[in-house]
Image (cartoon, rainbow, N blue to C red; front, side, top):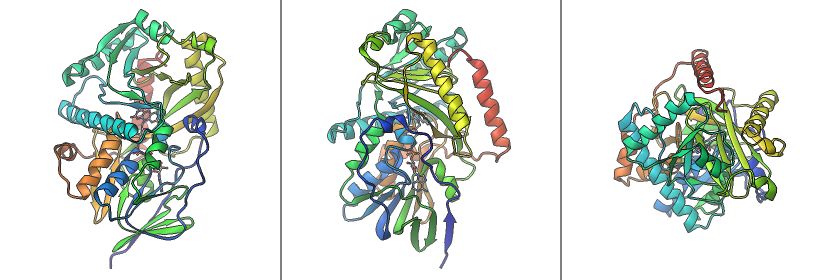
Length: 439
Ligand SMILES: Cc1cc2nc3c(=O)[nH]c(=O)nc-3n(C[C@H](O)[C@H](O)[C@H](O)COP(=O)(O)OP(=O)(O)OC[C@H]3O[C@@H](n4cnc5c(N)ncnc54)[C@H](O)[C@@H]3O)c2cc1C
């Protein structure tokens, strides 16, 4: 019988502290894979994709057993360490591939609605707020990019309105921004809390194992997933381990691993809150890719996200983290000089997957073997709906939305390093030069 074994070359490490996660109470001890665990389905990776696929499989196959296996803790990985924008639409200007953009847009909207429903149904405490977001430009050189955002929304039929410098000052307390494009509909969340809530409300036929990295995947009739203290035997496997799929030998040369970084402050004092506008909350996305994603959270913290880094190593060395923390400190100081010294509860990095063609990873990659990854823009919402749709695809439940997902182009092949590294670093440098004052 055909047999193949793949050992993971690299696993997620617990790297720099995820500030969102740090603000939550410690979770109960992890249930780890010990001895031999048998299941109908094993899902590798408990991010937005993995949690959604496990949930839906369990709903559709109530008599089957589903194992969700996570290397670290739920909420600690990228799905719990992002900026917390649950985007129902996303416009990044231009929209060269409009047909694909409009299909993606349907998926983003469905994903937002799906997550909203789950959060409401299970009363997940994650500071979910339908505040929307404002795309902002701080320099005249970025006004073209902002115009592109507005044109993209027009093409998609998404209503938006312009916010000027005074309006932005009213909302954010700073005159740093020249202009913005405000769109309603998307949500802001505490992402680590949302992920923890999603994982703790899975159907009873899902068993979650954490601190159990899959270090080897053996295919022989069924599948054997080897973890440090035990083994899972499963009839079918779903890879939802994002950029780490390539470390297990799958989806090679399809995904560009790009790190971005965030810092979260302690809650501002009442006096400090006087410096950050009148709405008690905001979410800003940069029109220029070199800019910063900035939030004032419902519990009064500033989140600052910027800086891009080619992350093939999937590691964040201390000197890089020191540089990032310094960037974030300067970004806060430029906007709110009076908040220059507010302490960070965490500065961390996370890896996003980008494709060459805004393509998808979705579907069968072998007999009984499936893969799903949330890449490019609006990934949390697309990942959630993608997980639900993949489970439906596996169980033969058709829908118009599934057809939309299946009709998207697959992630195109990429050149290997060092070519890819050179091209990506050149793009990062170009982006930095196009909006030096945006950060
Ligand atoms: C700083 C930052 C800000 C971002 N902001 C936003 C935002 O505001 N909105 C948005 O939509 N997106 C945002 N993103 C992107 C988004 O977070 C990711 O695209 C999304 O989380 C990917 O989800 P996923 O389920 O595919 O992967 P992940 O969340 O990475 O989940 C995969 C899981 O698999 C686990 N794993 C890996 N290997 C193994 C193994 N061998 N065995 C077991 N488990 C394994 C990992 O530990 C991980 O938990 C941001 C990303 C970053 C880094």
